[in-house]
Image (tube, rainbow, N blue to C red; front, side, top):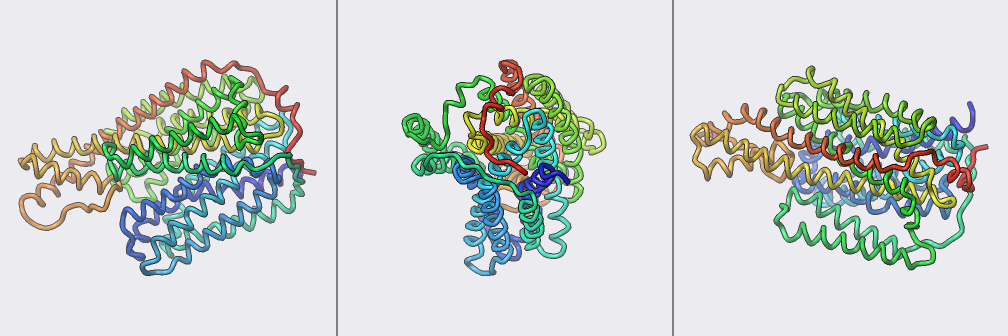
Length: 519
């Protein structure tokens, strides 16, 4: 087997863990809460800690890959990730359980932040420009599609023990490390110094702002805590930008944004990711609430989306290799916009079979965008800064995903609450009681807060249980707003794609010294 192929396989196995972990834990959440006696807000932190850490440290991971070599950082990131996974699975019962899980989930995020940009830097370095688009399309398509395995694998493993959803990373990590050794990847390091102050600023800025956006579900958009975090985080990020312009060895060389194509690539990635990660959560919850699907059935529902995504990722790579990124970005954002809009229109049919063509179409749109935009951005890196630019694009992607989850979640909560209030009042419940019960129902079906659906006897409880059948349609109608929002995001992405200057980044890329080579 060619060494380039071995290197690509090694990096896909390594990154597979980070993709699977984005969805696998959510399936096991009820069992984790029940066995460890976690609060619902504590369980949310178990999920959020991974995403916060990943977003905050991605730029640092990219810079470390440049300074110390991507192969070395891949190995370190894999070890950090798998050790923290084992420790998550070994969490003791008792009062320390919640803190234990949150800490080591955050450590998993740190490992993923080190691992992903370094792995992508290896793939970029070992393939020549004329073959890079197809290689990265395979990397993104296969690795991204593995996210679909999270719910399926989680449902199966939880039947044995929920701890296995963390331990499953161990064999994957072993395969990744063995293949990395067999690939004989040599590291070439860039000279320079680590910008510690810049790393701290971006970590604090990203962490605070993402925290504010993600906790807006619990705190409320009218809460001072939400806006202190969001505004404070954005202010710190502004300070980071000013600082990076002055420091001799910046964490992120902002000159890369002088390249119009790179800036457009980043913008298109941002708007695509406003839909890509949130669709996992919202379509899964919609399937379980409005379609009465089991978690495994909901995971199968997502496979329609991933089928379109995986196939289009390969086509997008070929378009990039032959024509450049602009045609793929225009096609993908247009197809994605149409797909999400048509999918939204079908949600109230309450039929999984009626929706699969539009789910696949939406997935295809995202597939056409992600690989070409990411590859084109990396090809336009300054000097040998593949790892650094990968850190930038992945930071943009994860930040956008966090914003999308927060904004769409707020829309879903508010619209569902309004719909349920109307349903309850139409059944004769007083306005005050209807408002309170609607909040309970909305929080229970959206996975928010510590509330549970009301139980017991009496007119209020009976009316509430009667309304639970109506909430299926109420929730579907609320999700229409979310999916139309995703269509709008892709529509804005299309307008950005029109600004792409076109052409292939061959000249820029071939002028670079490779970060690493396979031999």
